[in-house]
Every structure is written in C-alpha cells, then in structure tokens.
Length: 194
Image (cartoon, rainbow, N blue to C red; front, side, top):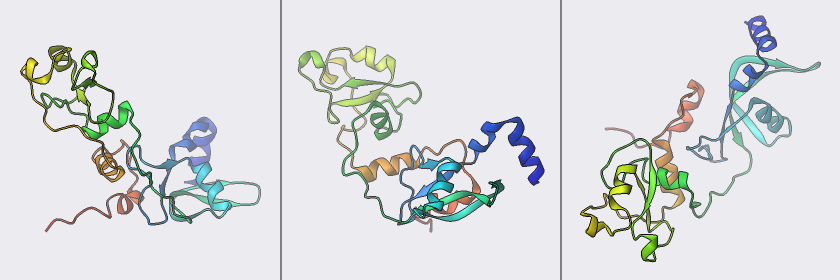
C-alpha cells in the first residue's frame, strides 16, 4: 500500500492535497460547516508538530521526512478554544445561505440573484433586513415595484441571522467529499430521532 501511495504521489504531486483534515474547535465542534473547516494535510501536521492541535483520527496513508514517518491526520482538534463570531458578515454567499439557496418569492432553487424588498430607487438599503435571495424571473417580475404592487409575497421576512443560525444552515449543505472519520464530529450535536 505504501508503495502505491508513493508512486501515486510521484506521478501526481497534487494528490497529497486530497487528504484534508477536519478542524474542530476545542469543544469538538467544527469551526464552520459551510464552508467546512478543513486544513491541508501539511497545515495539520505543522500545527500538530507545533503542539497547537491534537490528532484525533488519521488516514491510512503516511508521509515521510528523512527522520520521521507520520500518518496523515484526518481529524484534528484545536488546543485553544476559538470564540465564534458575534455577527454574520453580510455577503452575497451568506445571504444565499441564510435563505437556503431558495427564491424567497416562488421557492425555486438553483441559480440565484438577490432582490431589494424595498427597491433602492425608493430608498431601500442593502441590509440583511431588506435583501432576499431571488431567482431571475421573480427579480425581473418585481422590478422596482413594491411586493404588493407586483402581486408577490415573501416566503419569510428577511432578518439578520445570528452566527448559530448560519452554522445550522451550513450543516444542510455538506461538501461533496466527507471522509468516514469525520462523521462522528460533523453531526454529533444533532438531535437524535426517537
């Protein structure tokens, strides 16, 4: 197995980047779910060497230096707790995440844009409380009119999300790759079904 890994690395040096480490806070929760808090294997090994993290789980693959052989970490936990942000940054991505990548007028999913509930031409501001995810057809239909004038309605009233809400929203959109060693740490705080 080790020779296969070495051969694969020699032919494809970027292959070692394919072994990310899940980064957990000192409370054993991921720093973030979306994007999932991942470090490259190099960063994980360096942090372990500097005694900043503990290695909780490892891949089967090994890396070598002239004097050391180490398994590639797959789950690491920070030794010092990192306080979560007190507020969510107002970005296009976070807006879509808050609205779960769903048009707030018709409920469709897919390509999204954003819409000002109170149009900017009427004094509407670009804030959490006045901007929603919207599909292009609904955005064009509403135009610079009010929701009432356009004969439309919102599925939910826009508001500023707290970081815990954003964390939970991110959990609904797992990345394409989830290593089996991560599963106990990604969903351990989810409610159990009766």
